[in-house]
Length: 485
Ligand code: CO
Ligand code: CO
Image (cartoon, rainbow, N blue to C red; front, side):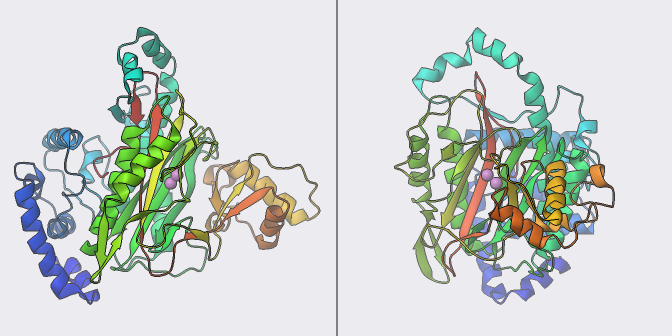
């Protein structure tokens, strides 16, 4: 309770903000009467810290977003059962708005709190938790549900499914844990390092075979994507910020790529909800033989039905038209197909077996991003040209990149870690010294590509949600689904 009040006091909007929150909550409670939001809050039995978190959660009423529709009812039922099985498990809820769920979901799976057991030790091979199953849309896909042939094809892929489910479970546990400690006042560089270290721990990092999928994005406000702190960046998260946490876990190069929006001020609820619902619409509309342009049009329709009032001024929520979802392949975050989030896109069709990261960005600004600010994200060009390198430092850095990241994205922060990005490969002797000139050289010759932050206009706010979905022969599986989003 004290922590919560102290936080609120940091915020000049505290008084009115707090009162508004309470009022809103009451209204919501009525609207969602009968679901177990209230129950969850009532049977809280935690120690100091956990009950604090819950109290805060109650004031924020974050049972609301996404709390409609049959799939979420199902989820809630499941959650109740797990709570029952877990007994008196302390429940830690997010401090931020924009996500649901408690960390007790992984405690019920046998995980510790905080989580420390690698996911591979938590389940038997072949039994990693499945994602949410949805049917492929369209009458032309109906036969898939019962087709014996499609089922047989699926059985042959089970080993791959099991791997990506393990990566998804790791991602889910890491993000639930992160949601329980992300609060105003946290230094972003500390937040990212803690999240990434937990990711390494739970995935049991083994160089490029299993590890982090890409640098942890924590883009703030008008920055939409590709921001993570560089060494020396002292940015602190504020109560008034809108932050997109976008991070990934990979096993055998199969990347789980998901994102959610963290905010504390209720005036951003609508913006976050717009992106969340637009992403859900994207997930609902994708499928085998669905045209990419149709997905974009459906997403835009949902996103742009929202508006958001900030400091008394109302903004239409716009899709960021030059950001996309994307297909993924082993060790390739963008495998060639883009999933637009506005109409008028490419008529190329999605295909069976493809992995997609479905992500949408809603903005109160122009709905268009440009490159700006200090670059932190880099990735080897998958079709890297063969160029002789003259600089010995560039040769050395390239060899480190090849060994440690292959064609996965990396950031400057990782190059400066003692382990250089992989304890498994380098122990504490992986740190890259004086690498900036070498990195620039690798970029200049086209072997490495820089991905600078992407920003909308100053003063605007961008929200994002993202899930990884697999188009299987009989159905689609939303691998990264959790009870948070
Ligand atoms: Co992402
Ligand atoms: Co993505």
